[in-house]
Length: 423
Image (cartoon, rainbow, N blue to C red):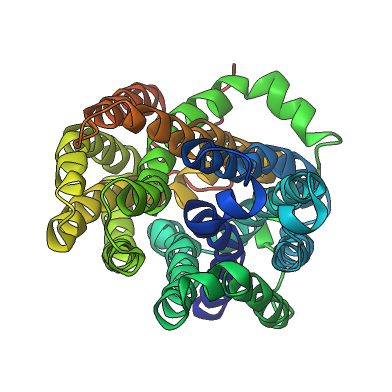
């Protein structure tokens, strides 16, 4: 289990590195480079728009890779998704800017971001299921939390590289070539991930199946649509909080508050370290007290913390911003530490790879794709303290709380026989 969990963590870290490095670049440099004819605000919104395309592609990746994951096995999905995400990320780093090839530059950027999201949409389902379906029932949340630590590691890698480049290069050097380096590094990381995953064995739950769904997505839509929609709505606040902290606040702090890029990255990265460290602790609580109670607590904490978070952000003081970000990410990880165990337990094995991943990634569309765009637009018409952003995030938290309240508890039902919630 330790070897399997470590390989899953490394793989998700690499794929989320690819995804996050784009979000950081979108907040810092992609607007002027690929949308130079826009105003600064419009350029940022356009860059966040291409950022959002990755989230739109993720459910489609879940359908595509989930089909093969439910019919051919979880392991092949991990290899294919890693190759697609890594190749498209390296290609972004090689892409000419608007000044070189004109309008073709943002169009190609959009296409590559779509391919990036397509690959990541398949990654989560394969990595999580391979771990969850190997894990003993009494510690399933704990072992399944290892792939959930991967996004924190990927974020720290992406932003650590960005921070080092930002601190060591001039503004002109960073805009000219420095921002490309993290994208090129994705190629080395992808090859490392393929080597780590080469020795993984197939999920025992999948090997036990005698009857595989012919068209998994059709079965999910027909029999599990309510579960998928409730899952997407429930997870929206987690995505909204995470990307409000890691993407929108980075742009807001540097552009509106005049905080240095280095200070903002350090504050956000420190909060992500706390979040990553607490992931297995929260997962242990999920094994002890149940998945649903932890999710309800995280949603409630999110609803209560959004106004304090934006108020602390508006101070521009690094320590206070760190406290605001940390509180938000602790509420976030209370939910997402157990999601990797919870979602597979909600779905029957024959459509688990598709159903769990589609619900998870639809939540990303609702929360992750929209939040940087909506928050940027709302903050533009606010005073120094963006209360409108706090209101938006609080409303999303309350909606997600309602969805979690309608989902059943699964612990300690064995993952192979958990009853699905049908439409």
